[in-house]
Length: 468
Image 1: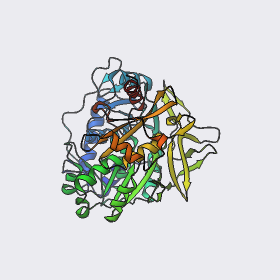
Image 2 (image 1 turned 180 degrees about the horizontal axis):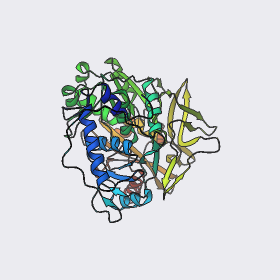
Image 3 (image 1 turned 180 degrees about the vertical axis):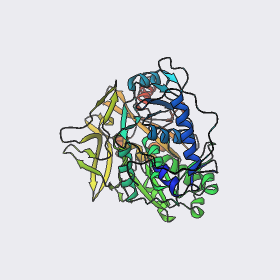
Image 4 (image 1 turned 90 degrees about the horizontal axis):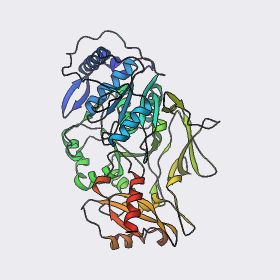
């Protein structure tokens, strides 16, 4: 697929009746999707949107987002999705930071609201290619910042194409396949699925009715699936047998921790599961591969084509390549994110296991307790190996005796927690000084709507609970 042409239009010219998307089971052909994109472009142009304008979209509907993404690509508008659950004031400040001219959200006095078309035109014969600029700013993806206003990571279409090409080298995707949009499209992991499918001519599966994943596997023909560990655990607890009769070819497991037990279960069913390490700044995947079992965890894959990875003497993972963002966009200018050699310092600690990377944890998450370094991720992995626990977040709390001590929040399948039993289970897998002093259920309001928890908010809550 040539970089300088819109991939949807290329596939529409080749086969206009091919299925581009299934929305709640209803097929949408390439020609129909192309027509919707053109209707949206006409509507926004008539409202005054111009090349280079930034459109803030609190993403509530993946179907609308896909149309807007392609419209932005063709018109050289900048797609700026945000988590709809972002606090209103933080959303307003982010909008101001990126200088958005337009929004699909009510209540912003500083920005002009856009009206979404109420009627989409019928598909018509398409007879010409659509030229695009692959090096123009294509999107601004908000990082999952835990405090203050998130950073806006800038990508070009070229960044995403090279990301997809690297992914294709280990996860083949064809026009006969379909990938479920199971990750939020305000996150680079979900955005990457859209680009991969557009380039490969593969179908996208969209569910706006929030049906259980096991139901979708029965009702839809899903060949590719991106999950985080929590989603995979819930799938195996509630519908493991469904995998035997599904058409799944690949599961891409990312978002941090990957449970060796869950990986093994999937492998035994003959489904190819790959673990991945990635980040917004690198347009999603950096490393991907068949997981190898190391110590108490699994590896996160080998560096993909068009990326370079090295590990500094400090243990920090450094990355660069054609998928690397030009920088953070703020107040009308681009802020570089690389050092003099072009490396981006990820803040992640890692080590090589053969040709694969094993991610140990975050430099900035580490706590020091009585002179001992403790990585919360190690404790989280141990907690997630316990039956019934589906999510775990460990944060530091102040301690007069030790300086800091770990405090754990967990989410369980049953909704209950036996703290004494959980600590006993941990004693068999991690050093006793790493066992959290307190373990509490994760409050419902703190369950992440994206892929990462708000560690700062949980740290403040833990401090209150520990010293009340």
